[in-house]
Length: 458
Image 1: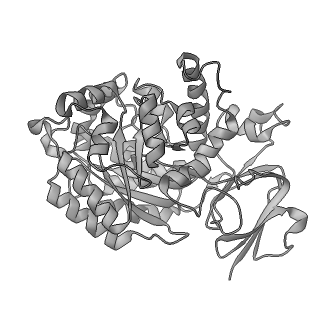
Image 2: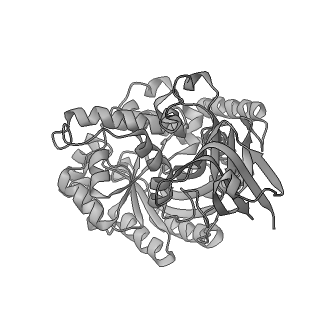
């Protein structure tokens, strides 16, 4: 048995049932799981590793519920800089058609390294395009080197332009191939046990890129194996127009008709959702990956987060793809979530003047405990006995926090987003003293930038 003692944290934010924030706090860890949480003087005094976090704020590791790692290769593409969702996709599909397995691997590592530095310990990725012999295996194998927990979504597209979909036929697959590969991935990699490092998710891309049959059969397959279901939904007004024209249904009703309801389902974005639909989502147990930066970047709208939280809908945060956010920073996303919710409240008649504004602590809860609930995990998202030792620490002795000593917990959201000083996953260091440990970042960046240029020129 290996042990870890974390001690002397200025404040330890637990996100436990009482939402305790412990001054001079710490945790004791055995074989990657927390066994004790409390003031430092109540914890054991010895361990195999002792981490003194005096002057640091300690939080549960942040949980990213929606991403597209491969898009780090196509950040800030000029033709897609000033476009809404559909035009953005049309500009980028031809570039993504040139992806190769090595591109998936290097982009996975860049995205996860960036996430780790921003405080993320568990990341869900949605890989839905598989040209040039690419496989989800490439992502899973590359992620193992980084050391973050991965929810790898086997995405898919099978509705090409010739059949009325948005993507070019060159980047879609056949339904039978998708389902067969999805089953293989579940049987090969999915680990449902507490502390698991890899879980598989079944994730057809969106209403305008997949057929109804694929949506139905994906749900059947996922439930046969007990894995989660994920898709983009209600992201953009053009999606609503598409669903109305093709199916005479709004996006949520379209998904409901295909069996996409229940605790095992979560949607990315879920912006264009009305009050009745919020109630239906809450009753069903559907979760939401809120992606505020991407939603602003593509002018998609403001998700009704206050309505979701009031109704009891599970809400986590997602940085979304690095070509629609151009960043993979979880603390920045928590800040954006707080700010855009406040902006949305000003024009929402059901919220304005009736609710308090979304708080920094609520934003942090979405980034931790909320994300865990969305992903269906009860072993991460909080610091309490029995949970995985996934935690981050941020020094409070920084210029960005000067004058904010009266509430350091809120300061980490209100003030300028920072990289973390420490990031531990299952009791193992991923970031220490602000440095990423498993790979040389400079070399990784150079290889990634070379791959990005080759992809653009392909």
